[in-house]
Image 1: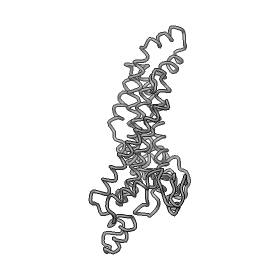
Image 2 (image 1 turned 90 degrees about the vertical axis):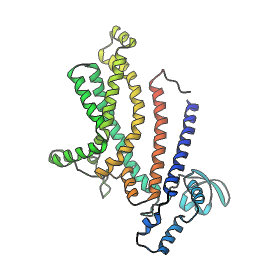
Image 3 (image 1 turned 180 degrees about the vertical axis):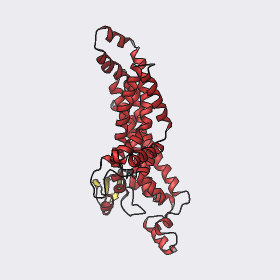
Length: 344
């Protein structure tokens, strides 16, 4: 187990290193002019030069790349005078110390706030949204899939297949528009839901009802996939020898179904969840903008509109770390739920 996790961590670090290099090349070496976006389209050259010097945009590309690696590396050698900016913990050293820190992503071009602070607040909203969406998808999809398998070739089975076929064909942003208009506008008198709204209002109060429609919109496609996958694997498991043996021993049908059949049928579903986490976060970018839900996707889209490159780069790096971490966790869970799987 430990060797497996360490090997996956090394692979993840290689992926993240590739992402770091790619986003630096895209946003700093393609000839863009971010200082004009920061200081305004009609500002004078002296002001633009001051902006370039402040953010290090006047330096050669290799110096900027070296500074970027210094900023995002969790372990690096820093001067003690850098503590206020990097907020690091000294490990060893004198004036220059080997420091341990959370990756420093620079400051936003638009607001001059730390990118860590900007993304940290938004990331929590997106994680809550994605987690709620996947829970809804699992609850609905697994139950629909089980009912369709148990009642194969009946109207229940056909209805579940129709629902899943429609769901997999609808993009998240289209679901978001339909749900927002139907339940947040047309039926608002009955539902009490809003067309737009974030997890917190302007006063910082938690507004849970604003989470329901974005989570449903984001969970539509996973529901369809999970329903089809659960139905398919349940049909295979229900015809397996160990299920017939359990039934022959006189076990209650409910116990056979949930304790024996469903547990073995869930392994492919768990694997699919890891792949859907990436899709959920990608879909969240559009869903959050439509619902004005101030998460990571909302912040990133606004940063693209403002040419706020540090926020964009930080968002991509955050997403890469999340994806690789989720894959490791899911691989371990897959082995834990299936005794036939061994991690090497």
